[in-house]
Length: 239
Ligand SMILES: [Mn+2]
Image (cartoon, rainbow, N blue to C red; front, side, top):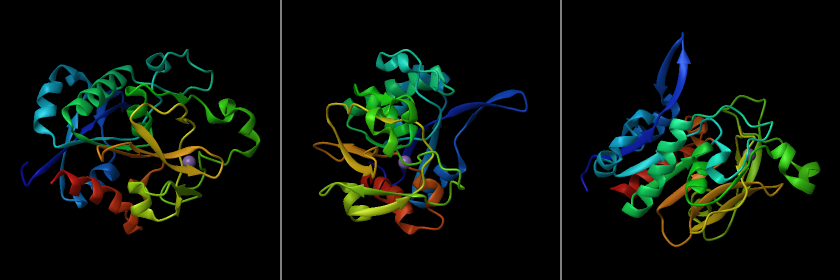
């Protein structure tokens, strides 16, 4: 592997001033660049070029974004399901599967954690508030009204996990999700939970290939070095 570490980042799509444009959030790019990596945007139209991206990229970073279309995990859409982007879903789900086989490391944030889990056979709650079952009365607020750059709830880490080594036993994090991992895919293990039992971190069971969190370290990294370490640890592992 070269000194220059290249991190492939699938892009979202949004209409800006009436024109559809591919985007990656600046905070996600900051996290990778400050860690010493070189980001490479992957637009969903480029699904025919996965061989190229797999050969060029040292690792992949799946960022936050819209809900994954439930058809990809065998469900009809719940009434509380949000916006979805079928082209991004197709690209990311295919890329996770290919990257796994190719032995490429993957980082996931929010939707990224959910996409990795779904690609490998897991499911998500389409809407925590409506589907979290008999624990609903104890559900904490996971879509914070506070600014994203401010933490609002605690997560606790499972001992012996990489997240546990990065953060210790407990960490105050931000939270902007109405979905969360439900059934965990084979090969993955839960690494962090909120007080209500909602899964907040995910890792490979028997390797360090996958590291993912449900909160947004990229939005906290400017003020909290521990959040930049999430990126440092990933990019460092690619060198
Ligand atoms: Mn949360």
